[in-house]
Image (cartoon, rainbow, N blue to C red; front, side, top):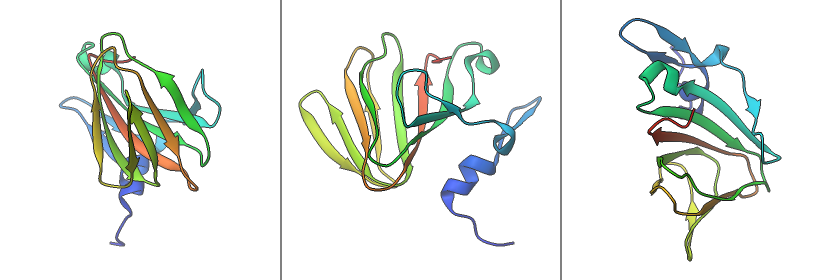
Length: 130
């Protein structure tokens, strides 16, 4: 078996549930409804978890960003899979790269900007975002 890049595992792997399986390769990327250059792949939706949590791949094209926003009720945990960029939370700005994680509590404004390459991250929300 040929080694895979971690990005491939998330984009093409399987999400296993006790009674079904989501094939990530078959889940389409969709443009974010608000932000140009940002795309979502909904790996687990709230429908599958009774609204308890959801998780999504988020791709931010190079030189684009997830603009300033917050989530009213959701905690958000992000894992940087590939690429690099900047995470801004409150007045703190942090350079992000693969392997780093960050947590955003409900009601806290934040921004995620891709650097000179596409940024891929796993975003987990509780309760579910969608």
